[in-house]
Length: 256
Ligand SMILES: [Zn+2]
Image 1 (spheres, protein in one colour):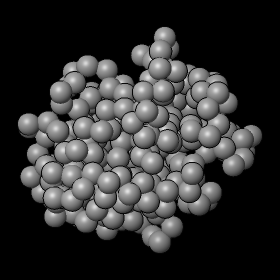
Image 2 (cartoon, rainbow, N blue to C red; image 1 turned 90 degrees about the horizontal axis):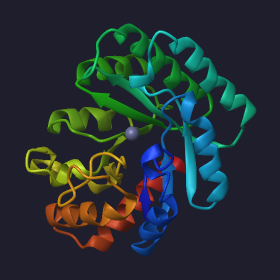
Image 3 (tube, rainbow, N blue to C red; image 1 turned 120 degrees about the horizontal axis):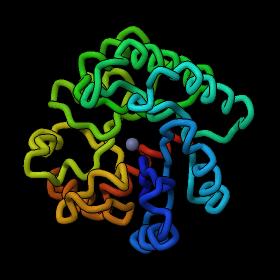
């Protein structure tokens, strides 16, 4: 079984055909879908999808760094309240982190929201799922102050260099690998095989970041087959071995 550890299946892009999208994924062997949260505007949509697919869909809870705006404290309170009103519902705190690509205005708030959510994850013994864009130094700074044996999870859509990969792993994190590994200018394909497979999980980040040959189009979980094929080439192992190892890694983290 293949696990998509990061898909936004509940967003508007999938409104008309999510059933077919899930069916196509199942046909190529994807058995579980981990859904990262964005903010309170999507909470009901996530619950609805989970109720429709209780054996396949697993939810995360969290405030995405791009949704950290002037009202971030109220958004964070919503995340904390959900942990109390919905016990045993969430499999990770995510996606959380820092994004400086669009806007640096709320950097301080992003840092604070990230730290607080890492502590929330620890309090519930849950993994974290990190979003990091143009912010490796800032994310590592927070991780450095929060690191301990309770910290674990995934560095989602990992796009850094070899040294950054090793640093992420040193904090108890695995690398989420998706479409970027198939991009000509993606760079991670140049060193990934030096990172042990024990540290890798599969993800799409759909509807975003579709792999080649669908780059620029809507992504979906069935396209994980292209990621698996690419990883088998890079690691010089069978596609089956990629599937077995990455699924084992994902189950270890999420206990889903
Ligand atoms: Zn995401």
